[in-house]
Image (cartoon, rainbow, N blue to C red):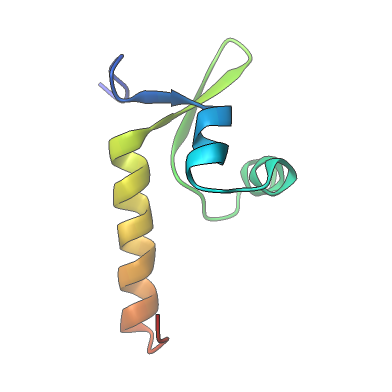
Length: 70
């Protein structure tokens, strides 16, 4: 299952917790830019806490492998 009830966070919660701008999140999703996985239920967007943390960890590992400094 992609999302369980306890793991799911609403889009606005995601934006607050990760300090992400509303328009940047909408633009990244609509343009298909690299972005944490999400699901749309009705007209609402939800993120999985676990999968979001995994995605950020993967991005960090990629940047470290690419020679960038944190």
